[in-house]
Amino acid sequence: MISYAEPLAFDIYCIDVDYMRPHLACSYLILHQGKATFIDCGTSLTVSRLLSVLQDCNLSVTDVEYVIPTHIHLDHAGGAGVLMQKFPNAKLVVHPKGARHLVNPQRLIDSVRQVYGDKLYDSLYGEIIPINENRVIAAEDNDCIDLNGRSLLVADTPGHARHHFCLYDELSQGWFTGDTFGLSYPEIIIDSGRYLMPTTTPVQFEPDAWQQSIKRLLEKNPQRMYLTHFGMVENVQQLANKLSKDLITYSEIALSQNAHDQRIEKLIEKLNLHTLNDLRELGCQQEEALILELIKTDITLNAQGLDIWLKRQEKLAQSA
Image (cartoon, rainbow, N blue to C red):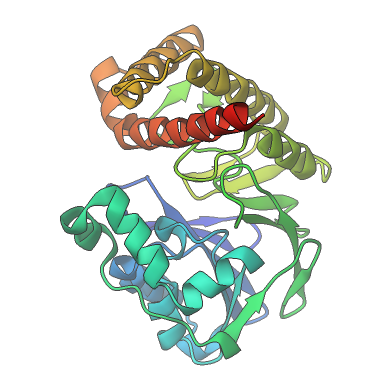
């Protein structure tokens, strides 16, 4: 197996898509009875990695049944259009609120360019290709996707984004969580194992809905979670408690900030401080400089997302 593809149990492979850096984002390949499904797919610039792993598993492009982005943020869905061109028999499965944006991605492209700027956008995402709507399945809450006899249950899980669902694999007793179960990088280790933190990126952070989504995932008593950022984690209840607590803390940090021109910078400072203090209390021995470098992009996006959430709260308060 190729070095950037980690074989897991239950015929699941974790593929590092090398988005921005190693161990930041992955795609999952599920095999069952000679057929294949990709969950989350990185960007159009990393499609070649997925094709190489498929070939290494002795499968062809005609054996892929589904491409399933958990939501339409481009580190999860940017490569979907290119993949659908490569896989003639595949259907794209996506949240109903995200389907039209992959059929006609121009609005999605414009919004991401606004956040990142043209130069960084082009280096990260490349070309976003529209997908024929006849090949798109808008999967509703509680739908089941049949992977050649292997069932994936769809659960609507807002909080990180309103166009987000998670997928429960009965065989592995695990959820493919996208960003709903936060992010956890293998380089950051604490006494109990992997460290988990929320991802409150723009523009649809909703803490109350997110808490309900976490409860929804736990109803299945899952034994493992397959995170897009990054890899499989297994101490599910402990990590769920941590994520729930951090969502409260993040909201409190945001609400403690006054409205001013430097609010995002202040949020970045507070989130960095919270994370570093938290890691030290939990036994992390990693150098602060490396930690800050690893989480730099996430903390910046988290601060931007919290700022947008605060603006919504302020607008609601003014209209009340």
